[in-house]
Image (tube, rainbow, N blue to C red; front, side, top):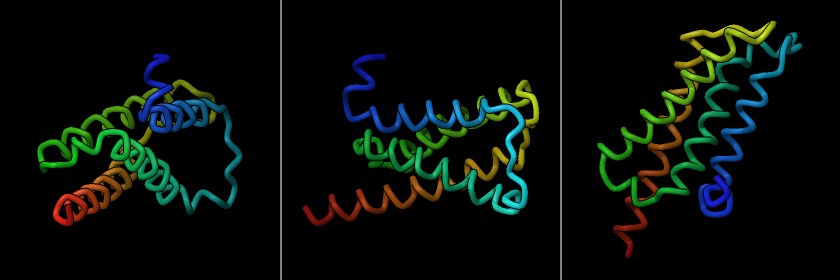
Length: 122
């Protein structure tokens, strides 16, 4: 774990940890912000995916590799949603998970396109 947090994976690992901590907070008072729930999910997991893509640029060289990264992030998002079912005031939802995956997919697609352009220019 120490090595993970020292290298290029540190930002992604810390962001993932921050997501778990934030979603472990009981009874969140979101009030009128609930209309921004799905965009917030997409944004937070988009950031995670972007950080993962920065940590593993060599993984962005084929569609299969990008899909593997997306599957890993989707699995993490599913576990995070599942764990929220046990937190007072929180709920687990397939719609929240879907928003997480959409955000991650968008960020990974953007990162892969950026990587492809950089390789073509080199």
